[in-house]
Amino acid sequence: MNAETGPVIFIDDNEDLLRAATQMLKLASFSPSVFGSAEAALASIDENFDGPVVSDIRMPGLNGLQLFERVKAIDPDIPVVLITGHGDVELAVAAVKNGAYDFISKPYANDRLLVTLHRASEKRRLVLENRRLRDAVVRSAGDIPLIGEAPTMIRLRETLRQIADTDVDVLVEGETGTGKEVVADLLHRWSKRRTKPFVALNCGALPESVIDSELFGHEAGAFTGAQRRRTGRIEHSNGGTLFLDEIKSMPPALQVKLLRVLETRQITPLGTNETRSIDLRIVSATKADLGDPAARGDFREDLYFRLNVVTLRIPALRERREDIPILFGHFLERAAKRFGRPVPDTSAGVRDRLMSYNWPGNVRELVHFADRVALGLEEVDTPIAPGRKEQAVSNLPLSEKISLYEATVIRDALQECGGDVKRTIEILGVPRKTFYDKLKRHGIDAADYRRNASV
Ligand SMILES: Nc1ncnc2c1ncn2[C@@H]1O[C@H](COP(=O)(O)OP(=O)(O)OP(=O)(O)O)[C@@H](O)[C@H]1O
Ligand SMILES: [Mg+2]
Image (cartoon, rainbow, N blue to C red; front, top):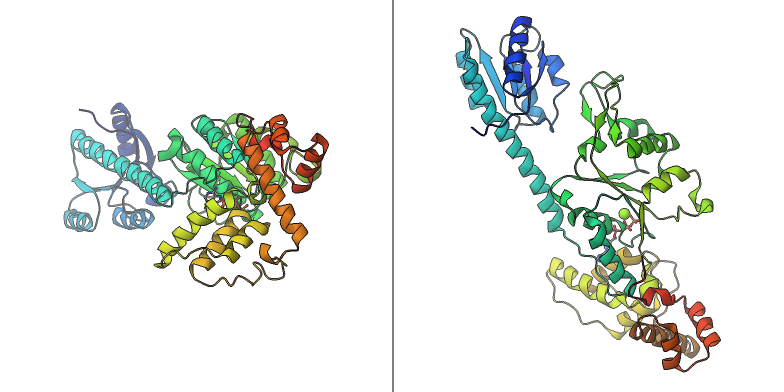
């Protein structure tokens, strides 16, 4: 028989029975945790518990039926097997009708219990696996590809493909709205970890008082108010990817602990001395350039070096203007579909604005703009963000129009020559120094157009 084994929680107030059950379960290759009371057992049960619970019905304190109700409240898919004595059979039958997995009458043959536990373990394993797969499907339903044809974006996608299925930790750097979370998500989905959890944690959003137990978990009774054992987020992401967002806002004390986790790949939940090994890939994100000591502030340098085995920098939208129309077209279509409207034609005014605005909120701001255009809310003459003075190209003075045109011509030429400066200069027929002056003035980096440059 290809029988499923694994953890089992076994509860009985009779010590001799507990000892015998432990031995029997171990012999059958289960990993039993035994408890003398329902209260004690409950502290070890949460929605991630990956096995069945077996309990005697008659016990002082919480009885087996009450325990079943509690477990059901934690996760109705945890199989609970009740052991009944004389006179409880009717109650046990009612409990099974109410969702308990099975009941077994005392005295029982070990084999009878083992068969039930094999089946219950298999069921539990399938439920948890299904949940993980469902999570993965839900995640990919909102599947966002990393759109962009700028040389930097093409290279970024190539690098992502290359490193996604390795275990290196990755630091993603980019201004707000550039797509850091999209990149983290792709690293997960393009890796073999995709069926395991992707756990995102915003290091700036958690109050310092709960961040420890949130990340590392705790045992019941580890501190006042810790009634139940809790699996921390790090442990929860075991096998998968832990996404640490906004790492610069991580409190200093936590930085030290995280560094230890990164070095040892082990955690120690609060209230235990026990260390647990974890297998995870850490992707972190930052808006600041943490490689620059001035920008790093009190973010630890050693932690920075640990996290950035590979750094991926996502360029701001204004540094890849050629992607603006592509992204806009995509978002406009998506918005029109969502709002059940026809895709509007892009007016000259909208087009002008796309190219003349500098998009400080990057792709996110462009998504919102497309939403407004799809809804017909975007008057071409209204400024994009309140208080920001933006003009359509058609309203710009001639000199600025020419300057914009010049930048486009230079970008096109660089693109055509694959970033080869010498050839670009020849094509454009300008002196070398003038060319470099113009690159500087327009904020263009020729390296971005070299196809095999590294990210
Ligand atoms: N290259 C891209 N292709 C398609 N959609 C993108 C791209 N980049 C960003 N987006 C979209 O833009 C929005 C912002 O992206 P995301 O949340 O990943 O940004 P972020 O860098 O994490 O921003 P913040 O620093 O503010 O958290 C999302 O709706 C995302 O789907
Ligand atoms: Mg983000």
